Amino acid sequence: MSRQAKNRKHPTVISWRFAFVVLSLSTVFFGLVARAAYLQVVEPDMLVEQGDLRSLRVKSDEVLRGMILDRNGEELAVSVPVESVYADSKVVMQANAKGDNRRWHALAEMLQITPEQLTKKIATDPKKRYVYLQRHASPATVDYIRKLKVPGIYFKQESRRYYPAGEVAAHILGFTNVDDHGVEGVERQFDQQLKGIDGRKVIRKDAKGREIEVLEQTDATQSRNLQLSIDQRIQAVAYRELKKAVLTYGATSGSIVLVDVHTGEVLAMVNSPSYNPNNKKGTAVHRFRNRAITDTFEPGSTIKPLPVLAALENGTADLNTIIPTGHGPIRVGGGRVVDVTGNGDLDLKGIIRRSSNIGVTRLALNMPHEDLLKMYYDMGLAEDTGLGLLGESAGQLRERARWSEHERATLSFGYGLSVTAVQLARIYAAIANGGTVRPLTILKTDNPPPGERVVAEHNADAMVEMLEAVTEKRGTGTRAKVAGYRVGGKTGTAQKAIAGGYGSDYIGSFAGIGPISQPRLACVVIINEPSGDYYGGGEVAAPVFSAVMGAAMQLLNLPPDGNDSRISKVTGGPDAG
Image (cartoon, rainbow, N blue to C red):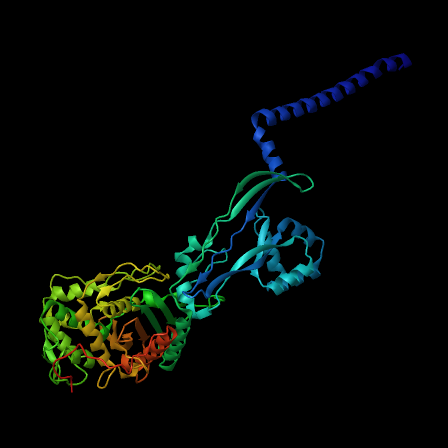
């Protein structure tokens, strides 16, 4: 081919290359223009959002949970600053890929897991960049991990709930979860008041991290402290004595409630077994239950003051009335009613002192049944006590159109109905308070709500002195006596119901008041399923009442009245033989 022919083809190749380059550049240019137009017109907010992600920051002004105090200002629950360990999964995995195994293994060992488990924990969710490794870590753990200087491991300031009284007040206070929300007890009931609301501030920062603008700010709502009616000194004594009794008698559980009869304030509420709210690991769930408000039981003889009061109120008996109880069991409506010992003729005081089933049966059958039920309802049976604590049971008092004579009889000595320890404490507080029923409260109050009178004052005062006779010679609760003080109360020994009848387990109880000259306190002691030869309320519960009531009256500086002369308001027939 000639040289002239070759020269004619060369410009054609160059022209196609030039055209291709121009077309490519034009395509890129128009693509960029189209993308810019799309971002500016169709999705303008996306650019703003991306810019905000790089410049906006949110600062949180955390509010510490409020303290829980006892009535004297002693701290029962406080929040302490702690640090939590978390990981930036992206940074951590990049660093781990470089093979820095020594520090990685040390970190896993400190967290008490294997290196493989640590890797899996961080890389489980690829969408979740920040992962907690340990919440509320101990200072020693935080210090050690900080010295490891593992890339991507950071620390966050938080708060942890601490309970100085430990297991002593656990059932009242409850506890919080790791996010500082109340889970049980007072912590849950008053969660909103105790928690407050964290403050929040949205700011804009420049490329050097300097704050240049505040876009939004919400002030924090401070939490409030909560002051309970509980006296921690009495609470500690009550728990010590209850725990000792439960262990001594091999009981499955026990409860004590102590109430100020004039205000309805609960000064102590304890259960055994308890738990340590500062370290709940391995604790059985049933131990979290506040048995004093949740567990119901048949009260047995501790309910006997009510049929006696009903008889006094409706006029079917007075302080001089003599009731023949005989010296053996009696037949009532196809069933038998039995006294432990033969008591012969008894007045009302003797019926209470000797805890006569036959005596209260005859009183109940001699009055309209509606009057007995009215007394039970007026005293607060089958309703909550006003505490407002979550999980409180109202007990049970059956309603039926017709009651057999035997059912009426058993109702008079505490079978066929169920109560809680706090309900029983409220009943005895009403008797000690001149027949006026008040709602109970777990909060300290200077202005208690007005109560409702359900029993004439002179009848309530007469019952107070009948209850004192129980602790005196020939009474069933002599072990409840308190040195230097006059006290009164009623023993209770009730078989526990099972399917189809009653089993071989018992509940021993004692409910009482003191001091008798000027009643101030009502106390109920429940010992559930004591084992061995001792199970009666006078044997297992009365000594606990004596120790707790004696300590409480001294701690409250109540003047001793044990040697005071007095004129009895209860007169009439002879006591049981």
